[in-house]
Length: 233
Image (cartoon, rainbow, N blue to C red; front, side):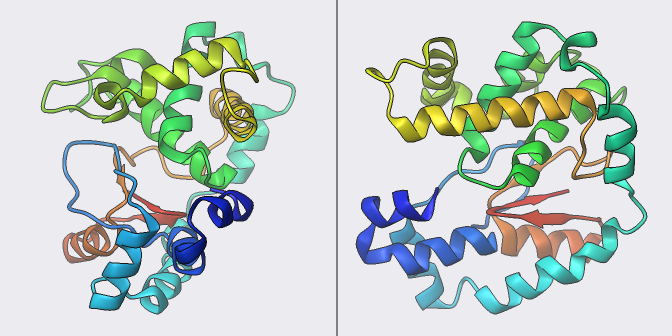
């Protein structure tokens, strides 16, 4: 969320909530789902006070783990693919719609890099011929339930709302910030479909449980990246 929106929505927990979201310290156990639940600033404040969240450690780790990406020249690869390429050369309007809306549900208030990373996870699964061979389109990935619900917005109503927003963009039905965020997510989705990447091709998961997931990745030797309130691996 923007600072302006957070200040209006949660005046008492603004500082803690903003720091926690910016540092990406909302955490949980990694599993065969891509989605990260969104917690309130009050919940985050409680976790910080109880010692469950270590802001300093998580902020430091965000920078320390950048070395894990040093061998992946995602920006150069993006420029080579993106420049002079139209987003819809290989993808349909439906692809853009569903990708934009799942990015909106998962990362609407986060940075462009985090938005793109959500889209990258989806496309990485589309292109995978191993564990994810059963899903071959963006829509199939989003609604996949082979092992479990992969994206909770498909069952909690938020994706349906996002699809309505995407279709209408009606200022009388939706708030100004919702329309602004959706436009940002559409642009991020177009970038993803042009080839922009902020995570490697072998990252198939993300969640908001940064602290515990980071530990599991480190214990197992898995590469990961933290952006905003998400950890991607």
